[in-house]
Image (cartoon, rainbow, N blue to C red; front, side):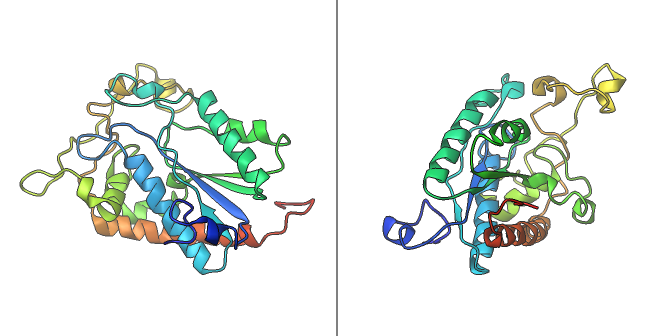
Length: 259
């Protein structure tokens, strides 16, 4: 039993402990090029959540890792079979209900550990601010190492690229599909440009129709990925996020929180 992981613990243990911080991982069910599983985002959320909460727990944090929500917003991948969508408003209501439950049980520091780029929760944080006594923190973990990514990867990629493939090789290699020669059973993850320079250069944004953007849902070349790169990425990510959880757990909820 990992005592920081709610799904594995029991009532006897839970009622004997106090929790300061709840971590809610959020995944998705969608294709990831030809070589990674549909559960990639969910598996990543679970693996990262377990590592950061375990490390924080060992350092004295009163933290609990909640079960991962395995569905996310997939409107831009709707053309791909079994890409399972939950609309942003629906997902927001589910999170709001879970926040209410946590507040009822005395937990008022909540971290949304998001593993899916199609989920956008900043508006939800603004909407819930003032409506709940809970303090919500959003962590899109894939944005936490932008300053060191180039030290680890040739090109981290956007979706099922080198970074995600390296994490998969480190955390759930049994689900990574390879050819007979040991190479990844994936295409190069090339993406198409739109006809508008303003969109291509990021001056204007759109919801990208993934079936037009990509060939097999991949964005970024996965082939340079290795398990060793994934382990290195996880080590730095775990140190950064576990330290945050320790600090959050120890912080007093006063009138100036979080300042």
